[in-house]
Length: 146
Image (cartoon, rainbow, N blue to C red):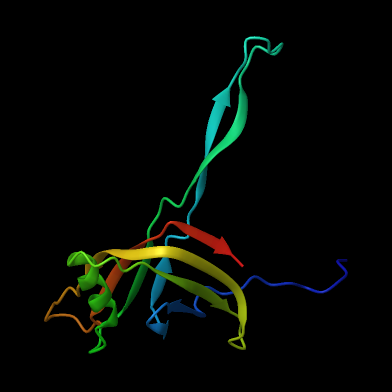
């Protein structure tokens, strides 16, 4: 019989996104929190072992953060993207915050030097009853779990 307190994982449906100069926003989906570290193989001529050593190389925040939400009259995301399109250097930081069942913050991923590299408007279809979704991809230089 197990003893101790049971610790359940958090659900992925309670989250919010905060973006500099915009504030907190609700989204339907958030993905792209994916990071890798390159492996560098190295060997010196005096090494006794006949294989390479593996050392850590460059860190990559390879995936863009993808955010999807129902489109409204609020054009703040598109205005940010329009700045990028017009050559205005508009890099922003932000956070993706996972919430518990009581909607208290439990985990926070902070990104820096992000800019919208893709904005996608809604697909419209007169034969469906779906919410119109806008999607943005934010290219980031760094993400940290705080």
